[in-house]
Structure formats: C-alpha cells, structure tokens
Length: 121
Image 1: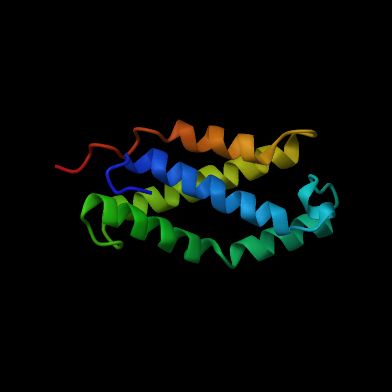
Image 2: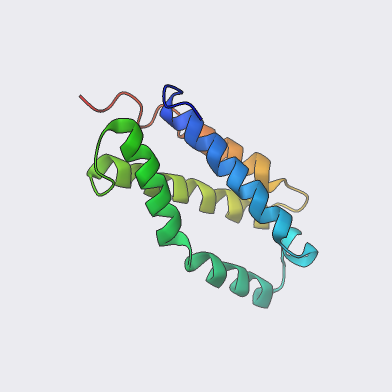
C-alpha cells in the first residue's frame, strides 16, 4: 500500500487481509464459533503465542508511517490498540451465534480511525 495512504485505514485493510488468510486455513470446526471449552482454550492458546509478533508488526508499520521507532510510545499504543480491537471482535464473534468475524473486525478497527492520526507534532 502506498505510504501516502492514511495510516489507520491502511493498517485496517492489512489486518483484515491477514485475518482473511488466517480464517481460510482454520479447520471448519474452528471457523464456526466454538462453544466447547476445549476448542476455545486451544484457539486462545494458539493466539497467545502470536500476540507479541502481531504487535511488533503493527508497531513497525505505525513507526514507519510516523517516522518513529517501533519501541516509541505511539507505535506501541497503535499496536496494543489494534490487538485489543482484534481480540474484542473475536470475543464478540464467539458470543454472537451467526455473526461474521471479518465484519466485526472491520467494525472494531474502524472505531479506532482517527485515534492516532495527527497526534505527532
């Protein structure tokens, strides 16, 4: 995506694209909202292993767009906010039978729009 594209919308599109790739590779039992504790525990454990890596990718993306280091406050805030939005969408998907994870993720990420744009002086 072009660097001149606004940061938050570009990030949202990248996260949605990555989420679609993950969903395409999950077995059907996991793609449907799991209602069994064991399936949920496995899915959460699997995701937990990737949280730091996901935050690092998002922090690097934000840092590149903002001209900051990935370890700086704002890129870290963006990374944690993005992960929080993704986790919230996932939790809502689990609680709402028949809901669409991609739509919930899109909605959660759109709620962050403008949250970090224009805050660097």
